Every structure is written in C-alpha cells, then in structure tokens.
Length: 589
Image: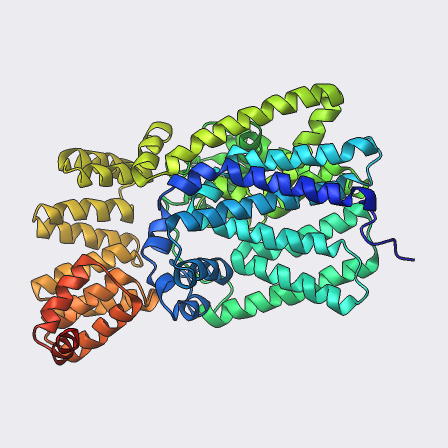
C-alpha cells in the first residue's frame, strides 16, 4: 500500500515549513539586491542581451525558437523566451532582468530547503526536531554562497537559475503521490523539458531525480513515472534541438585559449578535468578569491600529465568518491547522496567526457553545489558535533555573506570586472585582451598594444588577440597590417565572426567586393541576425550599387530595431538615393 501524501512533513508543521521557505527565498533575493540595482552587461551579456535584437522584436520569440545561439551549438529557448518576455512584452530595463535572476535564486533557495527536508527525513542519524532547522541552515548556505555570484550577477547566468528552478520542481514533484500515473508522468515530463530548454545540462535532472528516489526508497510507481517522464522530456528536447541545429552535438571549433582541455586526448583531458573537479570541491569550501576567467593560461595543461602526482591523485580521489557515494546511497547516507548529486550534475560540464567552451566556471557549480553543500554541512555535524557545527556553521554563513556582498561590485560594469580580473588572473590571455580594450577606449593605444603583444607571446594563434591587434592597426590607418592580422585570425578560427565582419568591411573599402561578399554570406550562414554582419552586408550592397539588396537589408535591420550609429549613417546614404528613402521621408513629413 502507498504511503500517505507528503509523509515527510506533518500537517501541523506544513505551514511552518512554507513560512520558512518564504523567508529563505527572501534572503536569497535580498543578498543579491546590489546586483539588481547596479549590475551591468558584461562578458556574454553584451552579445546575447545588449546586442541581441530579437529580444526587443515582436517576432523575437520565433527567432529564439528557430535559431541556435552563437557559436551555433547552444539552444536555450526557455531562458531566452524569458528575456524576450521581459524586454518586449513588459518593456523591462536592465535592472528588471537582474531582478528576475535574483528572484529565481530566491526561489531555488526555497526549493533546496524542501529537497533537504525530504532527504533528511528518513535518516535516524539526526534528531527529528532538529531536521527542519538543519534544512534551513543548508538552504541558507546555498542562498548566500559566494560561488553563486557569477550565475546571479551575470545576466546570461539565468540559464543556470532557470534550469535548477524547473529541474528541482520536477524532482520534488516526483516525490509526491498522484492518483493518476499518467498525470504524474506528464507533470514531471513538463518540468524536465523546461529544465533542458533552459540549459542543455538540464537533461540530467531525470537522473538526479532517480538518485533521490533510490536514496529514499520510493515506490516502483514513482520510479516508472520519472523514467517515462524523463525519457519523454529528453526525447522532446533533443528532437527540437535536431530540428533547429541539425544534430544533437554539432561540431564547433573551441579556441585553445577558451578551453585548452578541448585540445587534449581523452586520457589527458580526464586527468586534468578530474583535478578541476577537485578544485570545485575546494572552491565550495574556500570560496576565495572568486574569478570569472579560468581560460588559458590560468588553466594550463601539462605536457606529461601522467607524471603529475596532483593530477593522478585527483583522478583517484574523484573515482573513489564517486564509487563510495554510490555505495553510500544504497545504505541511505545523506552525505553520500549529496556527493553523488554533485558528480551526476557535472557529467556534461566537467570536460570529463564532453569538451565544452570553458575548462572551469563558477556558474557551472550552481546545480552541483546543491548536493555538495548538503554533504559538507552534514559532515561538519558528524566531525564537530551538533553544538560545534552550529557555531562553525554560523560563522561560515557570515563569512560567505560578506564575500558574496563584496564580490557583486565587480559585476557592476565591464571596467570594474576587467580591472578585478587583471589582479586575480594577470596571465590570462582573455583578461589581457579585455584590459587592452579598456586602454584602447581610453585612448592609450601604446599600453593597449603592449598588453596584446604580451598576450601574443602566450597564445600566438589566438583569434581574439589577433582581432584586437588588427583593430588597433586599422584605427591607426595601417590597413595592410590590419588585413594580415585578420587573415591570421581567420586562419586560426574561420568562424570567428568579429574577424569575418572586420575583414569584409576592409575588403569592401578596398574594392575587393567578391571576396567580401563570400565572407559576409559565410558569416550570415552561421548567425543570420548578427547585427554587425548585417550592417557590413548593407555597406557592401551600397558600395556595389545594389540598391534592391540594400533596401532589403535596411528593411531587415529596421524590423529588428537596430540603433547602431554606423547603420544609421549608412541608412542616411541609402535613403538619399533610393525609392524607399524618398517614401520614408514623405511619410515623415
């Protein structure tokens, strides 16, 4: 016979649990209030939010559903539909977008409270009257942990937040009793599908849900609901992804600077990725200093990794911890369950089996931290006793709160973040390029060039560095040097769209129209609504005196709502000599 609904929460304490969850959600939101009030668009926010014309267009929802994100391998319709809803439907500003992130983090903190309550309930190791208090502490630890700053204070970090919100809701619903197996399966499938649509790693939530069900010893009926519902959700997302991208995992170039691990053999990558998994554990325990840049040469692979004792030891540690966590879950250990959740959450983003665009990222630890923070909190009780763990935990919470509040100021602007990264990762190629851009915008071309020359010494074939160096050369009217640098950039990475755009404009200016056209069409195949390339195409059409094409591109840019100054200048040239321009001027009068 099935056990009663919500057997782990007595009716007398149900309202108290919801009140505590609301309080935790408020704390999770308020902790990130500085980010809501002051945060700016940095890093990928510029490309995916500030320069994403589809977010402010009435047909933007269709662009989001039917087109992948740059570099062509990302498909996150749920996340970007939420941005489109805020930007186009609600006419929200930048602060409202970060408000949404902070609100989602508060909701996730409350959901973690309910998950921890369910995980702790069957354990005889902890006093019954203390389990709710312990779940509150663990949820607060999640709410204020500094490693979550990047996910919340970075606009595109919403992918992590939404994936956890939808996935964790699905996990909690899988623990409930439904009178109808079909209804139970359908509801679970819906939330798992939304989690996958928020971020690709959301496809792991059915597996995470099964880990919870097995740990709690739930019924076969619930296991079947998760298996069937998860299969339907994953199949639906993958079918949609294939329809849009053409394949589940399209081949795409990963720059060595972005992720040097992607260029290693499997065994060498496994050793380095295992070491970085151990670093995640260390960073969750000691969350300082924080960094938004773990590219080359912050992460620098060893030539002979098998001779490295730290790498080999980290691999043994990871394999041993995973094996022990599986064994511990069978024995109903909540500490083991938390460790297992940590490893399962990292299956797609740790670079162990699938190389991704970065070797390490604090935002990537958002979902895995749910399990590991639970394990660390419970382990402190086992080692220090309840009273000692209470004192230690209270002090640790305050330290985490202070670091979290302080770390948010680095995300207020590009300049603040780049200057901070210059202090914590001075040898990073990406940091050198970013600081060089700041110096260039301040007019100090000499210092900007010196920083890029230093970056080229570290990574002589980096497309980002070569493009930045070419931009300075072109600014100094050294067109020949600029062209050579842009061709070197595209030789290293033919899909580097900023270099495609810059070289196409330069060739158009020089009169090499056929080669410029080939470059523009090549780039637009990869991103049909890339604003800079559309403007380059307009420039080409006007130069080639193809006014019919120019009017068509102008209509597309107007429909997308482009306000780029270069576009407006080209539009004025076009309108002064075209039929469309005369009609528009007549309408204006």
